[in-house]
Amino acid sequence: MTCINSLIIAALVVTGAQHLSAQQPGGATTPSVPAARPDVLTTIKGNAVDSTDRQLGNTVVRLRDARVGKIVETQLTDKAGAFAFKAMDPGSYIVEVMASDQTVLTASQLISVNAGEAVTAVVKMPFSIPPFAGALGSNPASVAAVMTTAAASGVLATKLTGQPVTPGK
View 1 (spheres, rainbow, N blue to C red):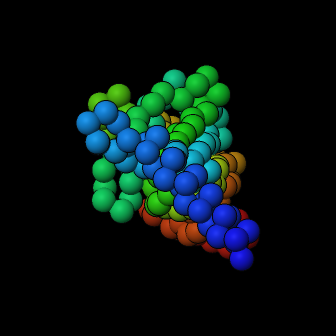
View 2: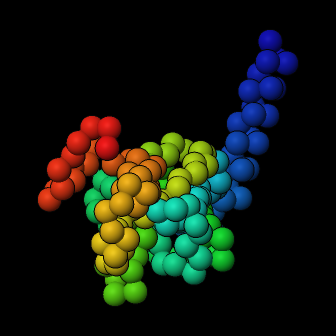
């Protein structure tokens, strides 16, 4: 029985000594602050590309917290259009590609990240028809080129106006 009592007394003495060593002069104690855990933070990285998958190098991208709408961070992509937002809190975010006049050119889909995850996103510019597109004319080759580009960009339906459409011609 004295062995058990000795162990209990020794444990109390060690605990008391640890408590006293945490005290500062004047009796104030140092609050116990948990250490920062890098595994609870997230990373969002990816590439910004145009509608034909060419890199958007040296382009401003920003990360928006989708829960509150706040801009969390802004950065410039590298030459290859790559970006990385590191040490972010877990949550839902949107990556935006910015124009030089600070308007949003395009945005990613909603990106949800959990603690410790690293996710990758590709932010792609939408397909746009150049202002001189009508200069190509309406021959079958140019119509086929426009239709192929539209299909590659995700356009599901088109309607040609001002021209009769005759099957087989």
